[in-house]
Amino acid sequence: MQLEQFIENFHFLRPAWLFLLLPIIGISALLRRQQDETRGWQAIIAPHLLEALRVRQYRSHWFNPASLSLLLMGLLVLILMGPSWQQQPSPLARDEAALVIALDVSASMEYRDVQPTRLKRAKQKISDLLEQRSGSRTALIAYAGSAHTVLPLTDDVQILNQYLSAIEPDVMPRAGKFAEYVLPLLTQVTGDESLPTTILLLTDGVSNESVQAFSNYFDNSPYQLLVWGIGAETAAEESPYPALEITALKQLASAGSGHYIDLTVDQADVKNVLRRIDSWYVISDDEAVPWQDGGYWLLFPALAIFALWFRKGWTLQWCLPWLLLGLLAQPQQAVASEHWFADLWLTPQQQGRLLLKRGDYRAAAQRFNDPAWKALAYYYAEEFTLAAEYYSRIDSETARFNRANALAQSQNYLPAVRLYQEILDDNPSNAAALRNRDIVQQIIDAINLMSQSQQEEAGEGSKELGESDPERAEGAERISFEKAELVSYSAEEILQDPKIAEMWMRGVQRDPAQFLAIKFSMQEQPPAPAQLPAATEATP
Image 1 (cartoon, rainbow, N blue to C red):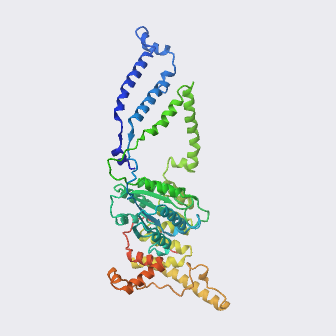
Image 2 (tube, one colour):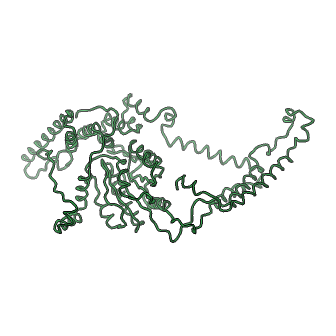
């Protein structure tokens, strides 16, 4: 429940009990006046001498049985007043809550730090969630370098699972990781903003631009945001992708006034998501539905205070547990951050810049929280796969160029050439991209020529070099940069011609992935480029 809604609905069921505080306060003031042992000596002894002669007892401190009794009676009066802020669930209430699932389909979601992969684990969790929400309306959005609606709101779990299984990185028209591109689709998918809608984002990391965009959007949005982290908290030493970015995801959830959900091996995370969605349901506006009495929860602190009432030396026993908890909390805070001392004086960005100047590039990359600087540090550290991953989270021509360089340095020549060509399609005057594309293409031609000569020497039993790693060279003659011509049909043509309609439906049912790839490719429009801090343009 949002704070504004809580404040609007908060009231007391039995406010007349508030008058009970008046005699309680009066009796407490009278007892305190009678227990003042210095009243009879004030006219005889000077005040400064009287204070020195006074025997200090436990009543001279504010934390004493008398003060705690006043607090206890105040809690009891508050319980009797019956604070309430929500109505009881009505058996006649109609579940109108909608769920919009935004699934990250970027390259890093193919990593196997959680089995079988991050993407497949996310799909399994979504399927479990859909099974628990059978009959409720759910929409599905896939995003990477662009965001696309897979299915609008529907209660058909079977078709949701069918299209969910078809979502792979290959169907996305653009590489990248831009969660903020999901936001413009939310209103289109839900249609009616008055419905209580939950936005569930499943991803392994986000950029600072995404956090800012989500903060701006959810400041004026009635939707609830849930962020479900997919991945392992620690990455292997030779991992091509970063570990689950828990800090950034929690910042994203906080920016959207939402909640972060941890991935678990059992169904605990699914149940947690369901509880969050259920709490967002709207109960029908019926004055006959009774309000819940929230005062019962105050019984627990009241009982805790009352339990100390008759014990001798209770003040000391009360303070010791708090002191112990405070001491135990200090090492936990130190363990939570290995750089806790540096964090007291420098921001992570400043620490990264200092490490970058010292030449400790990998440590600098781990301290940076900006994807542009992380990518640059990993590039200098010759961790080119990680550099390419973080460059993919920045939507600008400079970032795409540097990502292509990182791919070429990691010997992923074919993706590098394709990315260089995409840059040239958008900006033919980019001489650096043209030069690097020709260099990488020459490397591909040399690999193909060597593969052909080895095949001729070894006979038919030899396989081409590209067969072991198709993303590097594949043994192809030369990459064609001409785009294939697609034959498209309008909705009217499909509906009017039974043959076209049958062919279209048969194609969709046989290969949903191909249908989604064509659909996303037709929908994709280049968004406005984002600003990127200056980065070094390296030639492979």
